[in-house]
Image (cartoon, rainbow, N blue to C red):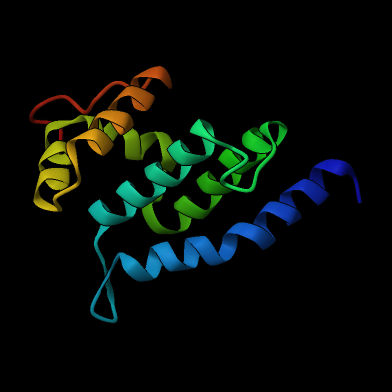
Length: 130
């Protein structure tokens, strides 16, 4: 097994329980998932990893692999090619901002997600398209 495969397996072992918890916290009843909540958690997990990789249990060199891991996990729930960027894109748009207000996400948290989304080069969903 090469280093990249070992890195992916290591991240999956460490973060699969976190993603399972995110999915559980995003559930509404037994069969429905609140995608607004899931997007916020997914974007927050990535932003925390980028902000302080060590506190997230990552080395800086693992961030790219972690990003790919989150995208793969997000595809199962949200679909699309890049669910992580799509989550930020959604959160930067009017519907995402309204969802964060409805869910009472603190303004500092919303501002942090907005700044990171912009740094990632994510353009918000245009009004009327969300």
